Length: 186
Image (cartoon, rainbow, N blue to C red; front, side, top):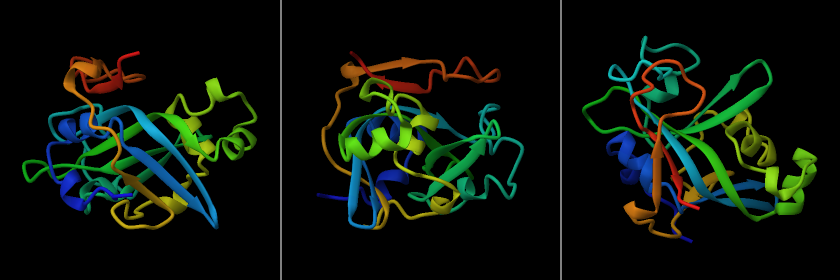
């Protein structure tokens, strides 16, 4: 089990979003381990990306996007859901993060089903669904994903560019020309 190092996230946000596909997001709750392979991500940058939370500058909510790469940026949306990102950017940008949009469940599936009260096919196929299944909340805001803590990402498969589907990001109205949603081809 090799945890992705900080240098993995210290690159172009769009490249990191693609390279996270096939990696494993691991959540530890006490002695319980819950995990899933990352199968869909979205990149959000800074001043070149009107859809990014960081576009208008730093706020209390988005300050993690301006902080150290490899840390969790968790936010509350629609008054009911959490979404989780990992801070990722190179020196050309002051902010950036990759949204975890979907996982393929691997470990702790029964636990995830209890959390979501649904079937495996509907378990982690959306950003709010995966945070609910893995019990990710604002408590994980700023957590270091490059260390063996309660939340981290490990190596698994290296995905070829030919295995990646690229499209416009989901649920946004600005910067729809940026094809920064990445998922594994079925």
